Amino acid sequence: MRPLTARSIVLSTLLGHHPPALPVRALVRVGELFGIAEGTVRVALSRMAAAGDLLQRPDGSYALTERLLARQARQDDSRSPSTRDWHGQWEIAVVTAERRAAADRGALRQAMAALRLAELREGTWLRPANLVRVRPAVVTGQCTLLTGVPEGDPAALAAALWDLDGWAQRARALTAAADAAEEAGDLARRFTVAAAALRHLLADPLLPDELLPGGWPGAALRDRYAAFEADLRAVLRHHTAL
Image (cartoon, rainbow, N blue to C red; front, side, top):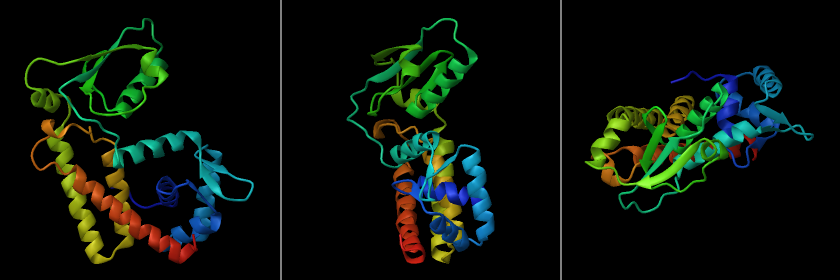
């Protein structure tokens, strides 16, 4: 888990806030809750704005830029995904575009990760067709999209495409760490664990229940993050009058 810094506190706070914009005084107070001096927070805000991570508004507040708004949307989706009933079909995306630039290949790989497709072999991506989302132009422009039912055991195929045991082990460890930090009343520790949990949820393949190992801990980890977020909002309202 990454240590708390002024940048991570500001970024995590804005990513978890809707709308993702807060006045400087509120962000300074958040930093103070975790032992970060006001000057350190203000320096971090200036550097993040210069780097294009934050936008300073005319009223003096700071907001996420377009790139980070997309990250917030992915995080929101990872916490409350839009799913549909699964009837055994899989999404299949096959790269058919020719002479792709390295930047195009990289953009496609990032888009596939965001869509939670796994690469079966180079140029062939797939996942169960149980998610509802829009495919960006970088995917539709480089791939032919198909729907099909692979032969064999779909659970075995899912286990070959994703490290389900590894994801579950990490999720259980984070859930236990969140419980311990809450029991200890350690807000800074809870913040660190919650940020790690949110990053981990971005890697959840969001498979149908039929394809998951028994005792899948995804819902438990989401519940722990939701509890932390509710408690943090209460603290922020008390300390910053938001």
